[in-house]
Length: 505
Image 1 (spheres, one colour):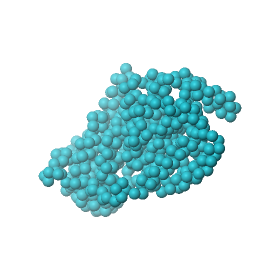
Image 2 (tube, rainbow, N blue to C red; image 1 turned 60 degrees about the vertical axis):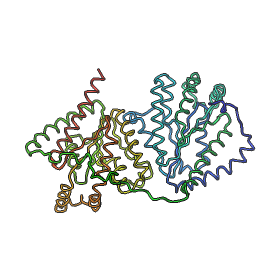
Image 3 (cartoon, one colour; image 1 turned 180 degrees about the horizontal axis):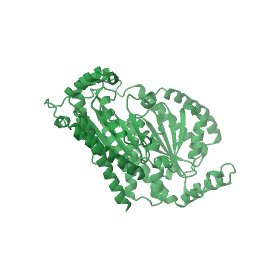
Image 4 (tube, helix red, strand yellow; image 1 turned 90 degrees about the vertical axis):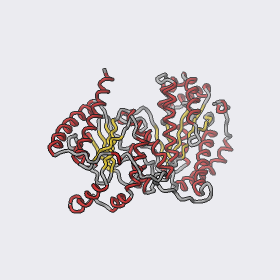
């Protein structure tokens, strides 16, 4: 695979200086056009030590406008990063639409090093590469342009490069004992790199192998490839593939059979209730238990994420308050999700949720969540059909990463009947301190009840997994709903703590 990148190709100095002015002008013009585009550009640099990754990134900053160009380098994870799922640190650094981000030491670094040093077997390594493919597909499906450069040197050329850098008084600091250890493991690195490229070079995120022997050749090759790829995408975005604009189909449609919808929500027993006495006793019991369990979870560094979805006026806020009232305010955060801000809208829809993941031992409560993609965005047409349809797989992968990292993920859908919702709406109109909760949007959503019920049915069918199941709560009676939420949360925390205790023995 790498033989064509070991030819010691050079670009004469005269040719280099002749090409650079036009290339720099092209890059700057392209950057200005890109600022108005609706996609970000992600450029990944990987390869053998000494092949010019850092030098190439520095050159790009010199040739381009650094105000619209960012560089992110990743070394060993910090304590803050270890407290969260592996991909948290990558998601939070993704560029917004119209910008370019250069990544050094990316999501490829740890799997490659772990495989080379024998800390990971082949099956696990392949599984990690599949996760990378899923991550990149999520970004690419959302419009991101992903370019990946593998900077290569032969073993002898790498040895020469490392020695030259060591002798350079300005650059010798770049070379460490680790670089020479990697050189000793050159054959293992190349075998691992070859498998990485074969497994992860896709049409949406292809690898380009660049010979790093000559700095001039390397610089022109990378810069021209970036210019051409962005220019092509900009031109492609101007005209639809068939030259026509097509209308997006509706986000929801009635069942094809024409029969009345029998959804999972319609099968719930909404008559469930609790007396005031049972509610008071249950509240005291489960709140006390929750307080103890969360302190234990904090001690064992077990994080918790709660997702609250449900009909307007279903009692999400009341249930959340019964949880937070017995927690230390330093240990939790409630995130209320509304329409995305300009900054959030400039990123992939999952970006704003990755940003809020809790540190080890903490609790994050989402009042509305990433499920907006397959609910309100689907129903109201804010997401195209292909976007919300692929979101189920994206959400499942996101939640798998949360659970695999040790987070306790609990998802609640609070269900009430249309009649009960109407009663609560009218009640809110008459109570001064509740009137602000009732908006025109609430009434508008009510008119599309059937569409939302169909969407919820699909949501449960596609995203209620063994790792992250949905808890459907009958909420016509607020007392019953609050106790059910507390009971379920305590049950999940107990299970997580028992599992952690067992594994530590």
